Image (cartoon, rainbow, N blue to C red; front, side, top):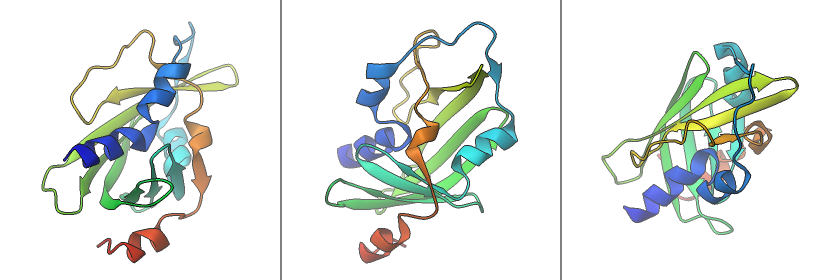
Length: 154
């Protein structure tokens, strides 16, 4: 189970990356619309420190954990409500669903995000946990399915 916890936590940002570049939300920042948040994820692959996850436009996810060598797969769903994106994933063979959510704001030409729901239940720091690099981690297209299928992903 520790393996899955590490993979899910890294799906959105990678915990060490966020802590190293976290910031405060600027005064006057406004929430992104649901459509703007969907554009960050839909039809793209999140390329993270220890995992990759594809966000299918149909609302499903599939992912591979482990870099440089893939070690396990997971799948689930993703949704957007307001300015918050959430995903709900299960690792192959694990009945538990792990939830991670991120909310987004704009200040000037920068987009800020905050990891609002952690898979492990830990609480976010609503003052200092904002980050401007999340959107850059999402690459156009499905960069996961071949590895996922090769590993026996369902």
